[in-house]
Amino acid sequence: MRRIFVKSRELVVPGTLLAQGPFKSGRGTFREGNRIYSTVVGLVEIRGDTIRVIPLEGPYIPEVGDNVIGKIVDVRFSNWTVDIGAPYQASLRVQDAVEERIDLAKTDLRKIFDIGDIIYAKIKAYNEVNQIDLTTKGMPFKGGPLRGGQIVKITPSKVPRLIGKGGSMINLIKKLTGTRIIVGQNGWVWVSGKKEELEKLAIEAILKVDRESHTQGLTDRVKELLMTRLQELKEMGVIDEVPQVEEPKAGEGEEE
Image 1: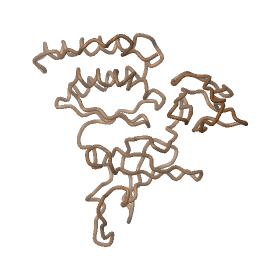
Image 2: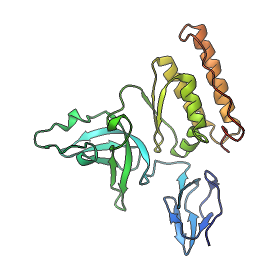
Image 3: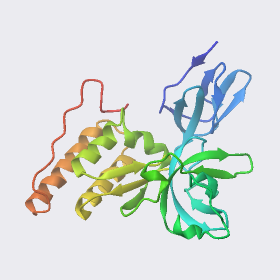
């Protein structure tokens, strides 16, 4: 019998019964017989047949298929070492970063990704010896580094709240600030705007979500913050007009 006893993003404690039946036990859970339990204090995440619990505190724990933002910290002969905020650094191999075959003896990998570059990648593999393999193939920006902008880091468990139901929260911030935002499931967020003031405003809103993620009415408070700051920027001559956004339809917007 298949049965899920919790909702996605529900707060659970160690020992909480999550599901029973042919589900896959993800990070932060363990299986006993045909039942799956939580091993940590965190938020439930249900992806298809996989159930995992994202810890409220602590570093990011990788999961295969996660899209993450990382920073190149070392360039080796055939791969790059990448910091993704996990307990262990990740590896991006050449064959997982470029489509064409290249001669490693004649190629300077720093011309593809150099130390300090910010990349958007997918967790390709993560095994029991804590080896984390990444791939940038098929990712936005043609798998290249994210140019310009700023990185803001939030608690990984707050990522679903930042995105919001149907993308409502992150789209609200994007539309009102006119910025490009990429959210990594590791809690790293890339923000790039045409004006520094709008970039900073987007970051202010993101950090507000991180601080107040478990409170009700957060979408309205974030919108109020953005509209107030935008009006101030208009009065300062930074922007010409205050952008407007459509009110969410019934059942959209606030994620419980």
